[in-house]
Amino acid sequence: MPIPTLETQRLIMRRPELTDAPSIQVLAADYDIAKNLLQMPHPYPEGGASSWINSAHEAEREGEKDFSFVITRKADGEYIGSMGIHLDHENQRAEIGYWLGKPYWGQGYATEAAVRLLQFGFEELRLNRIYARCFSENIGSERVMQKIGMQYEGLLRQEIYKWGQYIDLKMYAVLRSDHDDNH
Image (cartoon, rainbow, N blue to C red):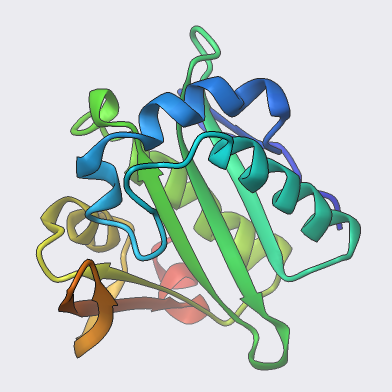
């Protein structure tokens, strides 16, 4: 299945293209972005955005289990962040992940995009469960999970080793039945 284009009131979520690389490179270089993400390096390597885009295209060609989206504003087409969904077809579940450039925090964009991604997951991919994890200190991401109807499922103690320390993750999830009841 090719990466679809998803729309919300203010946003377009689409397949990443190499023309997005300069914008991604600038926003991903921010320490405050990397410190909150499981797999984001800091400093962000030169060419890292192009490599990510190429790997997303390769996964799409090979029919992998990932959909990677760039998030742009409808009003001006500006790249503001990225979002993805990693599928586990056998168990009809997926994990979502997201990040926004720091200038776009606190404006409801992540919540708006995540709501649309849940809709895609439940209605188009026919998933039963969608979950997300965040570092225990990442209150902004945790609030997004709560706002989109995910339920707190627990703390994964010292789940990640990053930058010389063990980090706890909070786990949230929503089931299709929960989503259907609210929509």
